[in-house]
Image 1 (cartoon, one colour):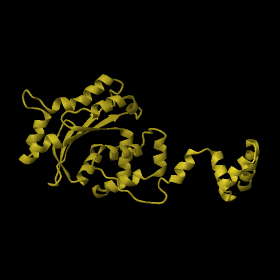
Image 2 (image 1 turned 180 degrees about the vertical axis):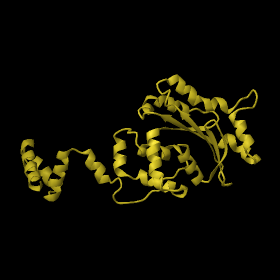
Image 3 (image 1 turned 90 degrees about the vertical axis):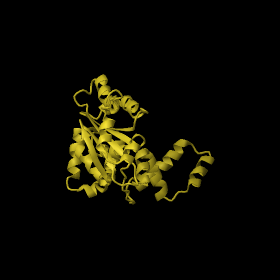
Image 4 (image 1 turned 60 degrees about the vertical axis):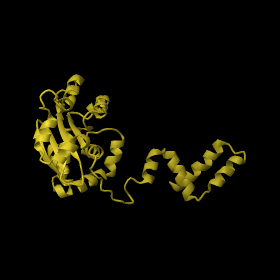
Length: 259
């Protein structure tokens, strides 16, 4: 996961200025953009059944960020890694943290949903984004990205996000796929921009509607369209004291004609 994140940050002109104990500090090289990020890598795969230990691991960054007693916290280490005084003065207002939390199973994300929300909503020091993942997701994604260099990683991630079958599969629930990880990357990395490609086929409204209606309704719709029956004609049938059973017989005969 470290490799993937580094490629994304380098693509967006971020430079690594400090790294220690699975934490990395990035600053944007563009002087017009004041933006800093701490990547906080947390491996919960061996403690995922113990909420107390997971909470402790996820609280460590905040607890270690500032040490008021001896000025040895993470914030001071980051300050010492910077050379520009203006950058130092802007850290407190412009730093965000991305927590990359590794689980062994994707269902752990649902189990600790409330804990994740509580960490993200903490008001202290920096804005937080929690990005859970599994090793399986990372392995699949690295394989998909293996033929693409740093310059193309955003385009490739966008291509992966465009796979319609994977989109509908994810809508049925978490599935521990690399596609799910790609969607999380776009949702949890604030500057990562999806490269939208307008096509007539992607996520078509017609397909979404067809997937949501019953087979019988689709058949009725097809029968009406192919027999060029107007809605007004169907309304007239109801007004002529015709029973629902008789209407069904008429519609069934139309369906048989188009099947």
